[in-house]
Every structure is written in structure tokens, then in C-alpha cells.
Image (cartoon, rainbow, N blue to C red; front, side, top):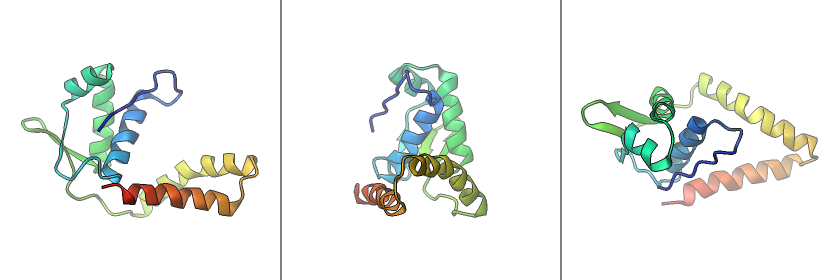
Length: 127
């Protein structure tokens, strides 16, 4: 999986990395049990500070996307936590400003839902 960091973006680098790994997992570019590069290797590969990668990996671990073993490394989780009430609260918080921006630009409900559905289907189609 290729990680691409936009150093000029307003989105923090650790967030870009975290989001791309989650997208890779959802799109099956990263398989359950697959090893991820070590923090040092990933930092060197993408040209960022090790603490930046460490922060992304810690968040991924806390959210259940990866497991970390100091002896054997980082791996994509074999099982993910269920989508509970807390997950849906966080999902709503993330979607709200996106939906609001779409509404400000007069994007209709059907167009917004269609785009969301298309993105979701693209993730499911990848193998």
C-alpha cells in the first residue's frame, strides 16, 4: 500500500497517515494479520518524524485497527470492535461539518447520499 502525505495540507500528518491506513484496511489493500512497517521504517519511508508515526499508530491501536507487539511489530487487527454508540457519536461528529458544507453549497440530500453510497461501494469492491 502506498502512503501519500500532503505536507501543505491543513490536516495533520498523523491524521493523514491514520486515515490512509484505515482506508487501506477497508479497501482490502491491507489484510487482517498483515504486518505494517515499524514506526521507524514508516517514518523513514514517508519522510516524517518518528513521533508523528507513533501518534498515528497509537490512535489506530486505541481504535482497534492494529495491534502492536514490541517484540514482533505492528499488524492489522484480525477483528475490529463493533460499531457501538460511541462509534456512531464520533461518526456523526465527523460527518456533520461535511454535510453542513454540502448544504451550504446547495448539494441536495440525494446527491450527498449518492456520493456517500458510491464511496462506500468503492471500498467494498476492492480486493
